[in-house]
Every structure is written in C-alpha cells, then in structure tokens.
Length: 304
Image (cartoon, rainbow, N blue to C red; front, side, top):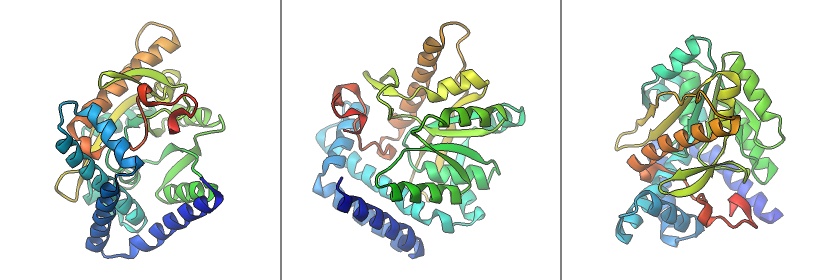
C-alpha cells in the first residue's frame, strides 16, 4: 500500500472510532449492514476470497447458497466492526448483557487452581467483545498479541484501543512476545490468542476441512512449556443482540513424543475444535484472506 493509501486507511479507521460510537445504536447497525451489502455487491477481492474459503467449509453448497453465506458473512464482519468501534463507550453492565458463553468453568477453574490458561480462538464473531467480557464481567485481565498493521499509526490505534479495554497487547513480531506470554502463564495468568491463521509462514501443518493449512504452534508450545491449560473457544452470532460462545474442554499435552510431535498433535486438536465452531456458524467466520496451502503463493507468503 502506498503512503497515501496508508494515511487514508488510518484516517478512515480513526473516523470509525470517533464517529460510530456516537451514533444511536440502530443507526450504527443499519450503517454496518449497508456498508456490508455494498461491499458484497462489488465482489471485491475480500468477498471472493471469503466465498472461496466458505466453499471448503460447506462443500455441498450451491453457488446461490455460497452467495447467501458470503452476504451474511460480510454483515457479520461489519457487525464486528460496528460493535468494536462502540465498545469503549459500553458499560460493564452492557458488556455483561451482550455475551453468553457456555462452559466457562473450564476457564475459571483453571485459573482458580493457579494454572495459567491459554484461550485459543478462530476469527469467529467478535473476539474483542469476548475479551472485554472476560476483563469486565469475569474480572480477569489477560495478555494478547496483535499483528503489526500498516501504517504504524493504525497499529498504534489498535493497541491503544485494546489496552483501553483492559488488555495487555504485545506485538506479533520482534521475538519477545513468547517469553512474556510464558511469564504471564507461569504466574497463573490468562493469555488469549486468535490462532486459526499462521502469520509466520512457518506454522504447524494441519488438516482443516479436508485440506492442508498452517496454524500457529504458539498456543500448544506455551501450554507445554508452562503447564497452562489450552482451551479452544468458539463464538457466534444469532438473531439476538447477544453474542454466544462455548469454551471447549482442554487440549491435553500428549504423554510421549518430541516437542515438535506434541505441538503438531495439539495444534491439530485446536484445528478440529475450530472446524466444529466454523462448520456450525460459517457466516460468522471472518476469513477474508488466503488460508489453505493450495491457495498460498510462496513468493508472497500468507498475506497474499
């Protein structure tokens, strides 16, 4: 992206955070749907990629069904943005009324036992809202990692935004994040990681909806090295204003094998849990980028 394009992107996001949160809620929701429908009708690169990804998730879907899913997917994606722009203005009560997650006992019992916990999520529904719910409704601070965005000012906006919501945010690049996450977990803390897309091009190969993909090995390695619980999470929207979710049972560390072998087994278990949530709620999977190895251009890496 050019410097002018970078500045424009940063300006547009800045307007979103400053303006959308001031709109009446029905107006903001309607605006999000109109933006989503306009983007969907234009059939841009992101929409086409979303449909190609959904074709793997719902392999028997007709072209008409895929179009319906991608349209619903863009509306879900814009709901994520409209909610996220408004989250800083939401009260703790409002956050609590907007989220309902099953089987949270896996998380609370793990923390109560003094074990660190790694929550691993795919790009389903609104992971930022889930994070605010954890900090405000459960009263549990946590550490996460953010992808370095361009321009740098946009990355800074995201970090400031998430820190204002009670999260400790570490940069994805730089190498120090893993050590900091491990220290937080050894102290009995919580780490939350979006983990269905590898950003390093050196992730763990998994079978995902019948094809090879790569996912980050960090969640599994952190659990092995620190003794923390590794818990997959699924989130989804329905026809209500309340986002739903489920915490899956822990992914156990295999009793035998090399570190790499154990990491591979655990990351595949994460992928399987993610696939369950995505298959149940494909329209809420906001994957507008290439994911499967068959789609990746080695010359361009995972961002292609």
